[in-house]
Image 1 (cartoon, rainbow, N blue to C red):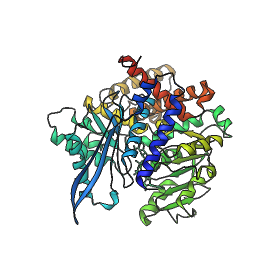
Image 2 (image 1 turned 45 degrees about the horizontal axis):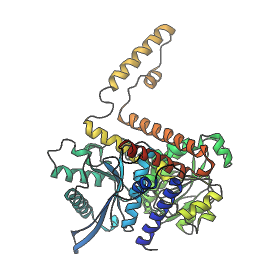
Image 3 (image 1 turned 30 degrees about the vertical axis):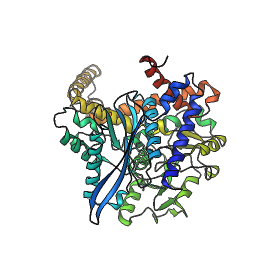
Image 4 (image 1 turned 180 degrees about the vertical axis):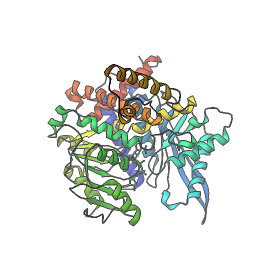
Length: 473
Ligand code: NAD
């Protein structure tokens, strides 16, 4: 299947999920259509100069919904990108923001390149030129459209975007808020790099902490001791694996572009990253078995499967062979609509992308707030809080006659810094958003899946926005 066909399939899956949820809401058809359609797609080409002469690059930016501004969503660098894929991803952003109460509309961008085929300076040229094209059409700005990292991009590209935008708009005091996921020195926020993977962990931990739900799928309560398989060791997959491992889960298999490995006793993530750096591959890792095909990892018996690479990975073809009890969608759209029905019949619990990987946009929202307020979180109150706790401890020492050790004192008398606040804001978001979705799932039998519940939650919140504007009753 070529990139365009993959994109079509992805868009059709998103439309199917939307329709299924929409049918269970009381909202009028006109409103549902308004929410579903993509408001604007900018599709464009630009030339870059490479060592072999000029090359034309194809790129997109889709703004799915303007019910809240700015719109927000990552920029993907991928050879497999297509217009339909970008629209599907932009629409998922709209629903995702609503699910986690981030006050943005949804957007997404893509540049059709394989970053590995380009030098650092070519990537800089492409990123700056892409940004300039967005500026020309008013498709970027702190109040308009705020990109972020996605597949194939990271903090370096986001910093180039911010720098380019600033060069065009030196008079805008809030210009740094035109993009999130920047390096900290360029106005980024501590905790953004790991935010999506950390959110995946917080979400899965919350799911596993419900004894009643776990019993239904034959699992014990708690993430500790759960066996996990991770597909994709990039930003999302690496951090999801890291936090799951630190939380006591055992990662028994990893899949990457070059292949997949399995060890039932568990694979140490940092040792594996070191091995990959040394050898250029995850294959031939000591004590682990190389699997025949990288896709085989998806079919391993485990408690939790985390697809964190790309869309359309679990299809009607391989879904019957998936043996995980829970699938946590780190990637966007890794399960096709046909596959979802098969997984549901098999009793597999799917924790959907529009909830589970929303940690990235949540912390991006915190970064945007930081850029608009021009002050680091915790800067004003950290020392004050520490002093208050300290005075309280002194009183306790006086009353009890016991002197606290330095460790005990440090544990309590500490003011929150930026990273503490970001982590706690993210944790609260992932916990409360899951409870909202679970509640909807439990209310009506017809809802059936957490995905449908998450879509219903998103549609209800967006419908309120339109109703309050008086556009739809
Ligand atoms: P990334 O580029 O950092 O990493 C993706 C990894 O997947 C790469 O290492 C790549 O080699 C690997 N990969 C590609 N195809 C594979 C395959 N068939 N099998 C195994 N591995 C494969 O990208 P990322 O930012 O981690 O994004 C991954 C997914 O998560 C995407 O769907 C993206 O849209 C989604 N997502 C990312 C963020 C974010 O903050 N970065 C936020 C929300 C959702």
